[in-house]
Image (cartoon, rainbow, N blue to C red):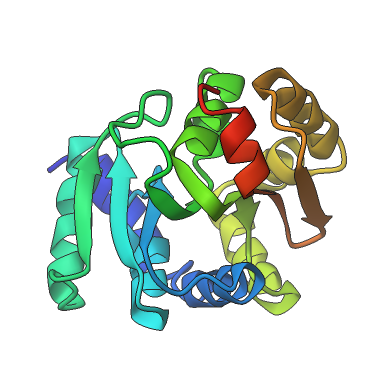
Length: 215
C-alpha cells in the first residue's frame, strides 16, 4: 500500500468524515431513490458510497481505477459490516463495465475534476442509468459550517487550497460543464451551484431511454 493512498484515506476518514453522510442524505432526499444499485464513481476510500448504503436499501458499487484505493475501500466495507450490500469494482469512468440501464443512482464527489474526457464520461454515466435513475456529479461540503471547518484546516495544510476550490467549483465552473453536457448530448440536467459546492444533476426518464438507447 502506497503512502499516498493511506494519506488520502486519513484525510477522508478524519477531516472530511462529517461531509459524506450529509451529502448522502441530500442525494437520497432529492432523488427519492432508496433501492436498486448505486455507483460511487472515483470512490477513493468509498466513504460517500458507504454512507449511502447505511442510509438506504441501495446496493452500492465502489468504483475506482486505482487498485490501492479499492483495497482501502474493501477494508472500509468490512469495517462497516456492509459486505452484503457493498462491493468494489476496478474500472474507469470512461468505460464502465456494466449493462446499459442497470443503475438507479450514480454519485461522484471530487473525481470529475480529474476525468480526461468529460463528454465521454458523462455519456457512460447516462448509458448505465436506468429509466428514472439519477446522477449527482461534482464536489461539495454539505453545509456552510462544514465547508468553513474544512477550509480553515486545508488552508493550513495546502497554501493553494483556495485556488484549487476556485478552479473546481468557482464562478466559472458551471459554464464549463454546460459545454461538457452539450457535447455529451445530455439536454435534461441542471447545475446546483452555491458557495458550498457544485453538482451536475441529471435523470434518465423513460422517453429519453427509448430515444437515446445508444448514447
